[in-house]
Length: 160
Image (tube, rainbow, N blue to C red; front, side):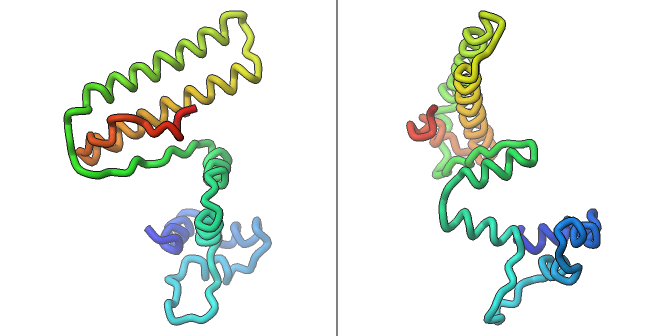
């Protein structure tokens, strides 16, 4: 879905007047964001979603995306790259999820043994949790696409 389409859908359930007031912008600008862009226009008034995308495309810095996700009460996990289907890795991939979960539980148990968790321990728990989410999301994505070739191993760059 393109950004203006997302904004058009949002405006079906949210007051454009309220957005205009909250952002201290004109009502016409809010509606303009939901219009299909004119490919022939020399100057383009990009909507905020397009600007965020442009900022990310320029920097390739995932901290931007993580910040937005955190502000909305969520988290970001990159989808794995898919190639061709190969079911030989289904069992090892399942075992990897179980192992990652066991590793997380070990970190939690170790940190909580003294009935308090230090900032360093919390950071370690967060790292293991992010790794578990990544491995699990990779597994689910591969299940949905029928592609188990990507389940061989999580790239070292993504491991905490």
